[in-house]
Amino acid sequence: MATPMGQRRMFEPGTQVTVKRRYPPGHVRTPHYLRGKRGVIERAIRPFKNPEQLAYGVVAEEKLLYRVRFEMGEVWPDAERPTDTVDAEIYEHWLVKV
Image (cartoon, rainbow, N blue to C red; front, top):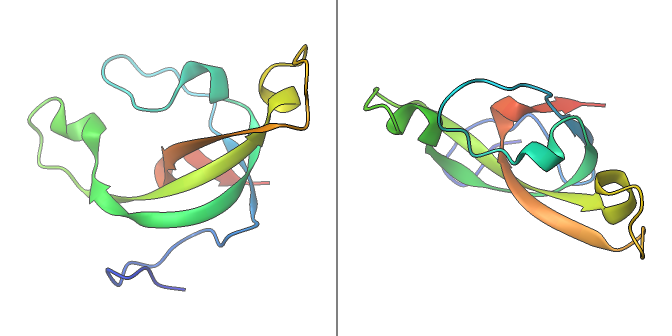
């Protein structure tokens, strides 16, 4: 399916994904505490220029941004309410389908 901007999306709402466990140097928008964690696509937002490239003045490609929902118990194993959720906006190139 396509986004409102006409870009093909890799993930539909409800798709289970894992955040890549990468640790590149420099400017990265993906929070450390979510890397390697499993979540569910809540929705596709829209494409934006890749901030990881923009930070260094490189011509930036457009990357699709998703809202991903994680259960607290997945993110923090000792969470007091493990079924509560936290949402984060993560770029498509950081996500892998489970």
